[in-house]
Amino acid sequence: MYKEKEAEALAAQKGHEEALTRIVELENTIDEQQTQTKTLELFSQDLGDDCKWLPTRGVPLIVDRLVRSEELAKYMFELGGVASNSGCKDGYIEGKADAKEGARDDKFELVKEDCVADYAAKRHEFEFIEFSILKAIDKLARCSVVVETLKKVLGDSDAMTGY
Image (cartoon, rainbow, N blue to C red):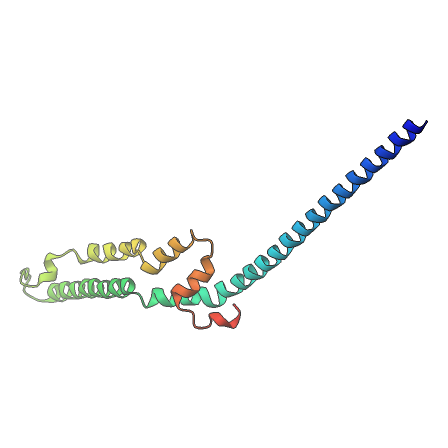
């Protein structure tokens, strides 16, 4: 009977030790979960701030860079040139048709050019303009801290406002 009691006591002690080990494991799991929860809360806060910053500051800054870009300025200058040439040519041809003399005036350079095709080609070119700011944003999109880096690249002076 003594051996049975001793075996029961050992079994109870072993069960108690296993329960304590399990409690420690559960406490560690709880600590890990709390740490993960805090991390996710901070990450969520950052995402919330980023979600506010992108439409209120990020997009306007990107649009500003596009509007002020050399690529767009060059395109608009060239588009204006070909549009002007097309209009001049059409006007010249109409004026010439109205003139009594029907001879073709080959001295006027635009008569020799296909201004309508030039204008159409220039308008089509707009679809393929590669803006350097968009290339930079595309590269940033591969980073883990896209918005923070984008704020730096765009030089957002209001980045300290909390967005």
